[in-house]
Image 1: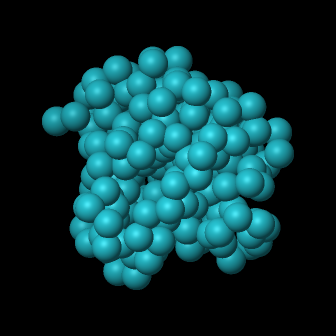
Image 2: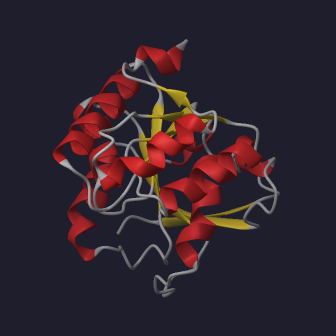
Length: 213
């Protein structure tokens, strides 16, 4: 892995948006392009067991937003997160992956190659956890505050009724960020969370330009 940089909250290159949230990480570990941490970003998140509809939607939004110079922030998880990073990479754009473990332990292991591509193409992988920290269940909700904290807005592509993506949306609302959601099939379990978000006030989107306006 490339050289790992440690950024204190007191450092001038610590992300400004993240600094303003409740309970910002005192320290960030970063591998890759440190400069994009302060670039305008939008988080794209969703469930791990993504449908084909969800995968295509994640790719569509991430690709087109990245083409507009927006950094795509996500969590390197299976499913929607992975396709969000891939869409940004295909657009030759910037993407940041926030993980719930030390930077020497990429989880899930199947995404090690994706992590490598993110770094090779000028993106960054970040964590608040020191090297050697294994991923545990409580790390993922905590890292979601960083995903939303780095971003100007959060887009939820697919989410079940109880989903980690909804935690990210909650953090975004607490942080005063806009929350967008992709409407889904009312018969799909993967759309219960996103459709509920829309009922609760999230902005429904069907085109990437909906987010740019």
